[in-house]
Length: 191
Image (cartoon, rainbow, N blue to C red; front, side):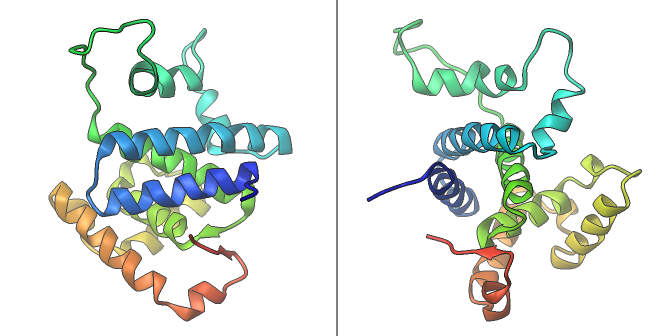
């Protein structure tokens, strides 16, 4: 099987989103999403895309990189043991960090490709609906996305976390059956 960089990123991203909405292992979701993000970030930079990651970098403290925040402490902990071979070492993986890295990868992917697979489209809208406070009030495009997200996920911001994810899974299942969405020129094929 021949796999391109963008294929690898898309496959990891789709798998991470499906696992996320299935309520599966957050370590696997985080690892897949951060791996996809790293590839997507480089591709965006190489293509001169105004990525969400690029915007996020502008607000970081001096001397810090976005990659540092993504790799430390969780990603490197999950991938490497050479610096700390103690099998009882631990790290805290917060639920909001899992959805945040997934959103960062999805948003950058969508900007790079000017579209994306159904899973990415649904997750993007889900994240915006769940975290409306993260949407810029000064950006009319972002506000328009927020209003659309509220229509797709009415009342989601007030639900318990598990119900937010359940609602996301239900919308994803319906979207995957939507022939019109699948036929849209901005919708890429899923796995």
